[in-house]
Length: 147
Image (tube, rainbow, N blue to C red; front, side):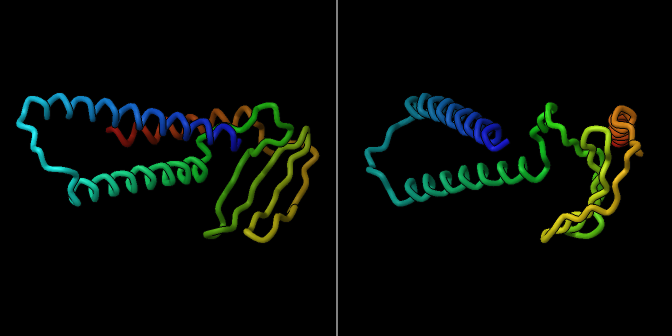
């Protein structure tokens, strides 16, 4: 998972540099048509450069945090452990139903520990109907939002 985040961030950084390079070339071509001042590097140009670099670094860290926080990177489908359902109870506490093989576990998750609240030998949530229902709910929400 970490390697995929690193690859995603690397591609983001490369695309950002290419975009800035192309914008710089376009601005350079436009500037060459205008009069070029013989003024050496000024404090104003250095401060703009430093602020732009700080902005790019902040954007990179915010995008990495957002990707990590929202789980945009799909989980490995080959994993024997699958998260079926998650519900926030408090600001940092939640209950989670996971499937391990044929068994399903109800877990209580806090920042300090993970507790098994119940174990179900027969599945209480069907994985296929859960995925379909979540998709249909999200689709209905998106369609209502556009109207």
